[in-house]
Image 1 (cartoon, rainbow, N blue to C red):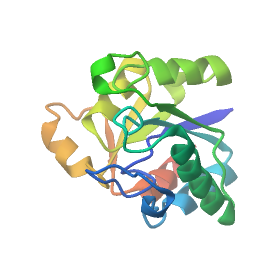
Image 2 (image 1 turned 135 degrees about the vertical axis):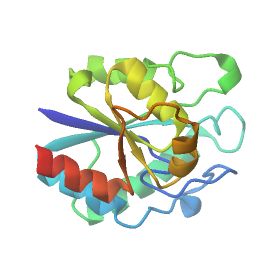
Image 3 (image 1 turned 180 degrees about the horizontal axis):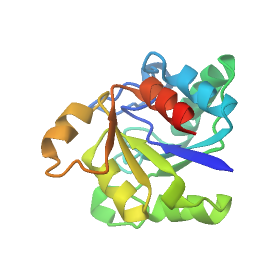
Length: 179
């Protein structure tokens, strides 16, 4: 079974420095939903792993986060795609929890629930913490230039072993071609 793990904000949808606080603010990056559907058609099971500290910061509650994810999943279904599950960390960075990226807790949860071989699994992200967690969890790190990707590229001192693509659609095309 083939899996791919995706970050949410900046990879699937446009990110915001002020948080995505409502379903209306959740806007997919062009081609991202179709890319997930293409991955599904190629036999990939897609999982999302995302930090959502806006919950702990009081910007939105768990019910609102659920509504945001319902919008995401409905729009994705409209193009023939699906997500196995969305794993998220609602904690504040100061809580020092094990599930907040770059800690590997979410990935350990994914591995336990789905028996994912993380060494054979791509993790697609746009931030420095996404690259760090991919490396810590033993995934294949992939950096997209949407969201914070360009800033992240500037922060990385060593990009060897990190695949880089313009967006999720380019990642999907490459992963499907290579599989």
